[in-house]
Image (tube, rainbow, N blue to C red; front, side):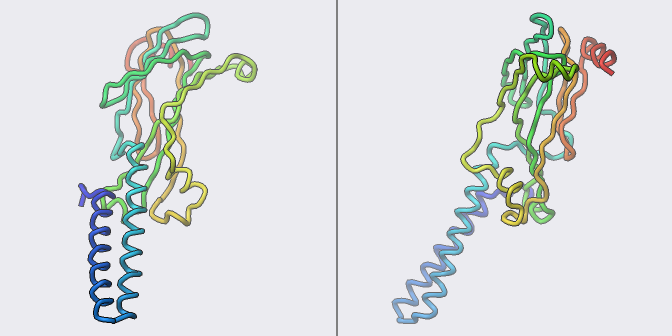
Length: 220
C-alpha cells in the first residue's frame, strides 16, 4: 500500500466510528443498554484514533519523505570579506532560495530525521527529514568561542513535533524506530558550490564545482 497516508487511515477510522455510533443508537433504541454501551465506547475509541492519526499527518507535513539517497539542496558561497560569506541555499525539488550571511571558515547544515518500524513502512511511512538550521563555523576553537557566530532556522516549529515527542517519550510512539539529528559541514570559499543529499543514515554534502573541490582538498 505505497500510496496510503495517515489521512486515509484517519478517514477509515472515522467512518468506522460513525458506523459504531449508529449501531449504538440502534441498540439504545431497542433498550439493549449493555450492547449500546460497548458500541458507544468502540465509536469513541475509533474517533480518538482518527484524531490522533490526523495530528500525526499534519505534523508529518513539516517533514519531507525520504526513500534512498535524496537530493535536498545546493549551497553556493560568495566571499564578502575575511571569514564572511554570502550563502544561498536552493531547495530541491521546489527551487526555493534562501540567502544568509555566515561568519567563519566552514558551513554546517542540520536536519532532524524520523525512521519508522517495519510495519509502518508497509503503509507508506518512509523515513522523513526536516532541515533545521544552517550556521557558520570556525576551524580555530578559540575563535569558535569568541568570534561572531551566525545561525539561521530553516523550518518553523510545529505546535506538536513528533521528533521531540519520540525522543522524550519513546514508549508513546512505538511505531517510531528512531529519531535523531544529523549534520554535515564543509569549508566555505568564494564561488564554491555544494550539493547536499540525505539518506537513511543522514546528511551528505559533496563539492559540485572546482572552487568547492579546491577548498575541500585544502581543508583536508
